[in-house]
Image (cartoon, rainbow, N blue to C red; front, top):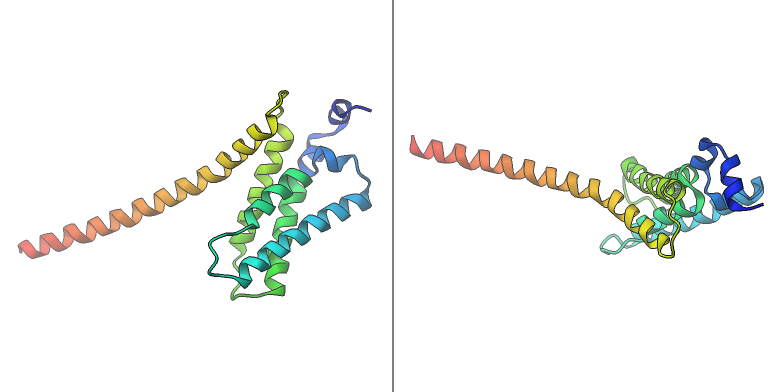
Length: 168
């Protein structure tokens, strides 16, 4: 049976939950693949917690790979569970759930792009990875630009208020 006919028989919900590779596997294989990717993600999270001064993190790379390999839904859940387990294993302080949501969202976006964006040429994988990079980094850039703008606006307001007070 070809891959095209398998995709036609799969519902949108199945395509959202699991990648084409994982949909072909039985239940025990799905659990095994999700467990292995979750273990890699836990290892990456613990490594980041163990070396907090490091500026290099594999967490997002593993999260993007989880979304691409497992699919959007399975990658999202795998990344969130792995983040929580890493905190249980090596708690660096309070649990910050938004970090788990961020890694889960990266997996979700990667899974959606790799499953639903279809290209039929030789460099399609590179184009998909570029799309995932842009889709995941663009909101971060926008949020940071907004934060910097708000900080700069608050500082300008303080400076102009101080200048007005000096004139009086």
